[in-house]
Image (cartoon, helix red, strand yellow):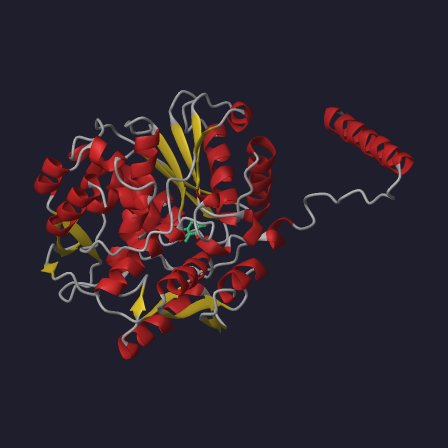
Length: 434
Ligand SMILES: *Cc1c(COP(=O)(O)O)cnc(C)c1O
């Protein structure tokens, strides 16, 4: 280990302070617990920021590994022994063709569709949660998942040699089921929606002593999402964007990107500015958008019905905090139909060569809707977060993407097929023009 990483590590050990209730401020030891015993508010990890500001610099970060663990001083672990399989540092792509199509001048795509090892942003949170689970002595890890979290938990558990039992709704896409089973966890497909299986998991967490990454380990797990803020700031050459567009499931990702930007400002790593936070939900599951539109400070749970299953959470744990952030940053929370989600997936693929899943389709479609409504200025530096990979949700676009031209292995068969396809293209164009 080189000197830079070593000093980074020492900083971490000392900077991690306590768990603190987001509502009443009560502080707790850094154990596997997630709700305040006094007011039932959610617990969040706090750090010694004055110590951090004396030890962390742009240079010390850049001397770290090419993964989320370059930000380990901001992550809730206390030992060197983290699980680093190269998660994070995914591309921030300057968009040209999608930007032009939408009429934006400075659009960037944060592409977690190619995150490692399981092609979604959940690898960030699980890398952190299982590193912490191991420190706390858990030998079995688990999660309540809408699909991607189960993939990631199973993969990291396999890598770390931990026992794993994950819970998903029984009606998930084939790619998400296979994407967990391949790592040989115990996979519980629950007959019910995410909110029902989450309640079941809370009971199991109490009776089995397992480390549930998004229940009793939630304060640690959720910190991993801050790295999506840190990386964007670093990749924009140590500047914050003007506007971010982020999908909303539980709302955790959204609130932690906000926390991440603020930590960088607080430490003087970037200059402070008001980053506008806009959230994306599907019409078929939009409890956070409904609260935002009605100016409510509480969430009314809904029963999800949308193809965007990875963000189909009817009773989102961090919903109220997401509403608050959208309000105070002058952002928005918008929803789109399932048809618009499919069009969003296709639009991103055809203009940028990025194949995202339904959550990404939701986010791109909301981006488009916000631009069309004049709610994003063309000159704002805007970052759209693409959080998952399209190969896992193939069902969503089946029937909307054309078919291959089957030909004989002969030149004239090829020429005829090519001519036919060009004629068809011309006809389609004429229809567009009419
Ligand atoms: C889980 C998930 C989200 C939502 O994350 P939350 O932290 O629950 O808001 C968004 N996109 C994808 C692909 C996901 O798997």
